[in-house]
Structure formats: C-alpha cells, structure tokens
Length: 222
Image 1 (cartoon, rainbow, N blue to C red):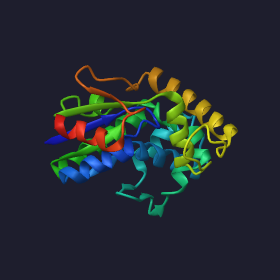
Image 2: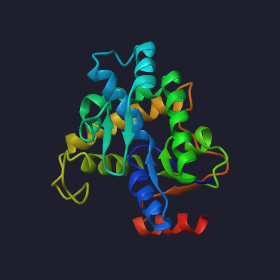
Image 3: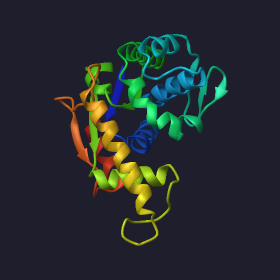
Image 4: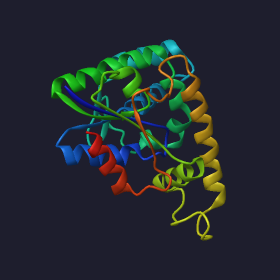
C-alpha cells in the first residue's frame, strides 16, 4: 500500500498540503483530525461529558462516521461546520486523548487505507502509530505566532494579510494562540499516541516557506 503520512500541530499547514499532495499524486486524502472532531461533536450532541472516557469510547465505537473531501457526516447529519465550532475546539483534545477513542479511530483509518490501497493521511500520529511503516513520512511545523495567525484566519475570526498591518484583531490572535498552546500541551503529553516526530520523518518548517515549495519538497521525497 502506498501511504503518505503527514503529521504536525494545528496551523502548520497539514490540511492544505495533504490535499494538494493527494491531488498531484492521484491519491485519496483523509483528514484524521476531522474524525476526532466528529466523535467530539457526537459526544456533545448526545449530551455527554468529554471527560467521561467510557461515554466517549462508547460513542466512538457506535457512531456512523463519514469523512469526505469537503464534508463530514455524523450519524447521517452534515456536521462539516459544527466540528470546527468553538464547543468542539474546546473539547476535541480531551476526547482525542482517550485511548479507547484512538483505538477505534486508528482501526477505521487503517481500514480506510486498506479499501483504497493507499492514500495521503494527515494528523498527529499517522507516521508514528497508525502507519509506522508508511513509505513517506512528513512532519510539518511552523512558528507559534504564524500558526495562530493561520488558524485565526482559517476560522474566520479575523481577516488581514499580516500581523502588523493593524487590520487584525490582536485579541482574536492571542486567544487562538493560547488555545493552540493548550492543545499542543495536551497532544504532546497524552499517554495514547502523543504528537511526536517519527525518527524517519522529513521535518519541514513552513514558517517562511511558500506553499508550492512545500508541496514540491514532499513530491521530491515521494
């Protein structure tokens, strides 16, 4: 199977890069982070407490989850917008740290690849846990301030081309930066599949690197 694993923290450019690489190679693409967001959405929708490991695991094993290129369906409901909302943002790292939830999602991710004979997967543990034998492993990173700006603009909390032009709400970026720092800490210190760089992964810092240059570097590795 031809598996390309792209890992990294939020705001490092994983989603856009993974989509582009998949398109260039004619492979299917899977956003595994969306799967954990979908489970979190299902937990909250059921009135559960994300801190209740047993409840979250039960939901993860029972949920009908479908992740497509631009849409996410949870038990038949289009949750594409909701899984990126504030309530899910606040709880997703806690749900994703649940060993039972991760075990179920990893099994589904491996089955997704098996049915397709390969693919481009992005997440936080693809090259270390889900597919440690992936043919190509990439770890994307970026300066914390740049990641916060990207995520702020992605979430539509502000709209400006740079941090210094006066058009961006500083409070919005600061809030996102604080949330990213919190998630980074949880993701990198959790017991189950923590965010980490695979020993044989190509580390790419996208802080000052153009999108096209990043894509070309990965394609060269492929």
